Amino acid sequence: MGIATTRAVSLVGLQGHVVEVQAHLAASVPGFTLVGLPDTALSESRDRVRAAVASTGLPWPVRKITVNLSPAALRKQGSAYDLAIAVAVLAGADGPAAPGLRREGLGRVVHLGELGLDGRVRPVRGVLPSVAAAVAAGFPDVVVAQGDLEEARLVPGARVVGAASLAEVVALHGGPPELVREVVAVRPDRSALPSRPPGDLADVLGQERPRFALEVAAAGGHHLLLIGPPGAGKTMLASRMPGILPDLTDREAVEVTAVHSVAGLFDPGGGLIRRPPFEDPHHTATAAAVVGGGSGVPRPGAVSRAHRGILFMDEAPEFRADVLETLRQPLEHGELVLHRTGGAARYPARFQLVLAANPCPCGMAVGKGLECSCSPTVRRRYLARLSGPLLDRVDVQVEVEHPDRVDRLGSTSEPTSAVAARVLAAREAARARLADTPWSTNAEMPGRFLRDVLGPRQTLYAPIERAMTDGTLSLRGVDRVLRMAWTVADLAGRAAPTSGDVGNALLLRTRGDHG
Image (tube, rainbow, N blue to C red; front, side, top):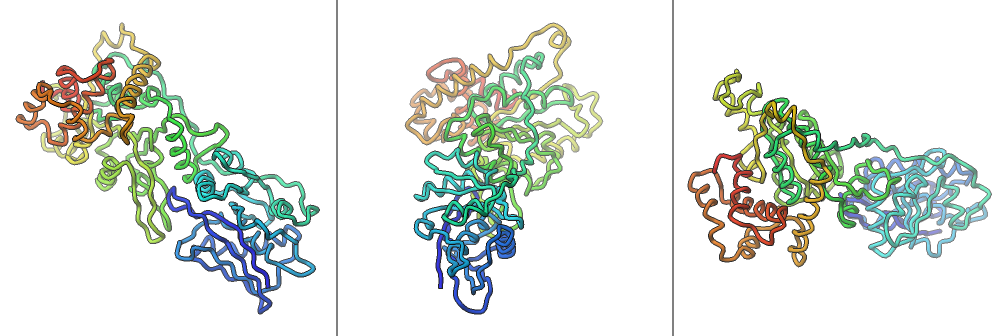
């Protein structure tokens, strides 16, 4: 009878749990049993492991084999356990034909990889958070597929070895080295679309107020709504917003990279993701595509892939109502908890929402609306698809009009680099002010903190009180106006907002309805 133990990692969302993979080989009727709540893909590992061992040139143990994945109450999914199962089974084999793997110290090594029938070790998703979880749990020695080596090495403190085949892993643990032969390492399938350059704000002619709204939104981390006719430049403005956002901090870069690793969209060749991501799902996207889902443990959707970046929803009223309403939780809490039959997954989702919308189905209800063919009822119903509770969470709401002839022919606009420098300075001012708090941007500040910081300066509240009396501002909107006032002050280099900053913030909040 032989018993051998090694380790693997189970990912639930971005949270990794180190799993003990224990193989028990007994002299009984030959068989292979896998226990510990495996899903279908993991249950099929029995056949993959058996074929990989045979292709490597090793005899399969003629024993009653039982492999336990502990803790047994934790659901396990995916094919990343293949390598750990194969190593545990081969280490537990005894007799003259056994490969002779060292059992001592094997229980301190984490193995992550899928096995092909030819014995090659294939890459798996989520290597970065898996290795990070292993290191945090006190297991820094990790063996991964050769194709995942670059990604695994991004984790500080990890001692990582890459293997192209099961034979290399067997030799690493004291097995016969003569079985190792040269094979072509399997490269991970990265299905991410090539990133496109964000473009320059100098291309946007005129549009002073929308450009200022874009700058305020970027500097304070505020959500943004752009309403205007087709061709006014809403999409152009939104697509240039990533260029004025500052680089991610080290902690933010790790968070974003982990999400993209789980989604299978991370190319480790360039290191950690340092630029804020930009996600722009089509208006036909389902709720599962936007917020995440799938069978078993759900995978991250566009909302989580946009973490610490921008989620742009063009033609926002054309999105299904259930898709738009699912955004309310992540907008409020900065994370998503998705419950499925396979378990609950928690993903970060602290993104900036940028919405673009036409004022009506034909898009021409601007100015006097003389060219609009829509009835007043149709106009109201169209924008009503963006519910009040959703819009109440969007700080900056601005109308984008067609630039006049002078703007189109004779003006020059500020480039992205100049705007990005002001945004960075404003972000650093906010970060310094919030250094002793759990927040880093003005958009995250709660109302109580805002009022404590502003103190007795009641003169700032006069325009806000008038807007509340007129019914153009809600109680939730008051806090959002104050947050934007701080951002306007940060952009101007002031230590605290003035009544003028509050007025500017109020105009950005109410689309200029309140002066």
